Every structure is written in C-alpha cells, then in structure tokens.
Image 1 (spheres, rainbow, N blue to C red):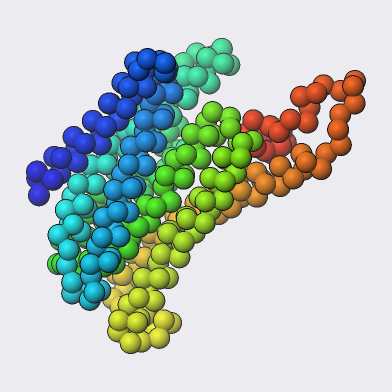
Image 2: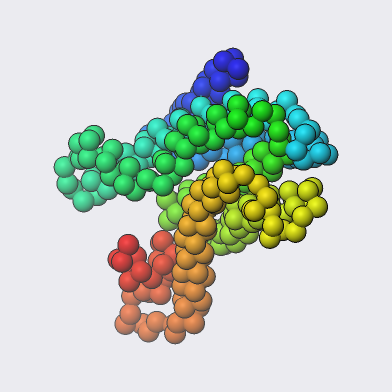
Length: 292
C-alpha cells in the first residue's frame, strides 16, 4: 500500500516538473514560466484522466458479478491516484498565482501578497478544492477500506467519469490563449458537453439502474433498497457535477449564440474599423464579458 502511494506521489509531481522543464528549455519552444506551468498542469490532469478511464474500463469489463467480483486494479489505482488530488490543489494554485502576476503587470498595479493570493484562490476554486479534499479524506478510505472488496464494478464505472477531463483541460488551455473563435474550440466544446453529461451526470442514474437489474427490482425502488449512506454519497458527489455541467451549458450557449450573431451582423462600412465585427477573443460579447 505504501509503495503504491509513494509511486503516485512521485509520478504526478514528477511528470509536471518534467513537462514544465521541457516546455521552458526545448529548442523551438522556450515557453515562459507561466505558460509552461499552466499547460503542464493540464497535461498531468489529462494523463491521470486517461489512466483512470483505462483502469475503469478494464475493471468494469472484468467484473461479471457487479457486487462480488473483484479486480486488483481497483484498490491499486485508488492508492496510486490519491496523491494526484493533493498535488492538483497545489498545481491549481500555481496557475492562479501566475495569472495574478500577469494581471497585475498588465494593470500596472502592485503584486498581491501571498495571503491575498491564497484567499482569492480559495474563493475562486472553493468547490474544486473541496472536491479534492473530499476525494482524499472521504472517498479514499470508503473505497479502500469500508467497501471490504464489494462493488468493484461500480468503482470501475466511476473511474470512467474521467473521460471528460481531457476535453475540459483542452478547453481551459484554448480559453487561456484566446482561441475561443477557432473551430477546434467549438468542436472541443461540443465534445466536452456530451462527455461530461454522459460520464458525470448520467453516471449516477446508471449506477442505480445497474444495481436494479442485478437485484431484479424497479429503478425507482433502488434508492429505497440501498443503505442511506449510498444515497447520501451519490447525492453529494452528483451535486457539483450538475452545477459544473450547468456552467458548461451556459458557456456553450454563449459561445454558439455569439458566433451566430457575428455571422448575422452586417458588413462594416469603410468608415468603421474593420476589427469591430471580429469575434471577441473570449467568445462572448463585450457586455457579457464585462458582467463577469
């Protein structure tokens, strides 16, 4: 157990440092510290997501009895991935810190002290930080010890929730570098919308459906047939996914309706600046941007 935890503790921060070093020093790249940190953190998140989804697929396909069958990869990957959530809290803060430095430089204001940066980070990313803390302090002991080897199939299916993460990470990178007007951003946004809905929102109803089939009981009776702890846990895990999905839907609506308005806008006259009808860098209208 300790060796797997140690392996995860080395792998994820090590991959981040190697990626950052490569982006900063590779011939032809020479990226800035900020750019290297932001892209490297997204890369590590995507790698973790691919590993988790692959493990989930193997586990789910291997468990014929969804309650009793076990797969060694279940507990092993949970132990390996726990350090990722601790590392990612720090990586997200680094991204926040460098964005603050750039903003302060552009506004020609004094750099904010570390305490102010941390408080701002916790306010901005409160839900994500809380999610990571719960994963380490609650989901980890429940998945490894409290389950007592039962329900590896369900754990494998929950790993598949990470399938949406690479598109989320790519979307954040494109937004960071003002590429919301590109076709890649629109295609990735549609993919993110679909994968997030299937893998993170529909995931929990599917778990109830799968247990209902296993126990030969109607879907609507499943919540009344399982211990209340399962219902409470599913509700707590699903709530932030629904909230994040609503934000994705709102962003997608603004992006695609904004693109439609630009296509429908009349062409500019010679006396108007030719840049006036170009799509905004962030994919929203100026009024929408100012309101955030």
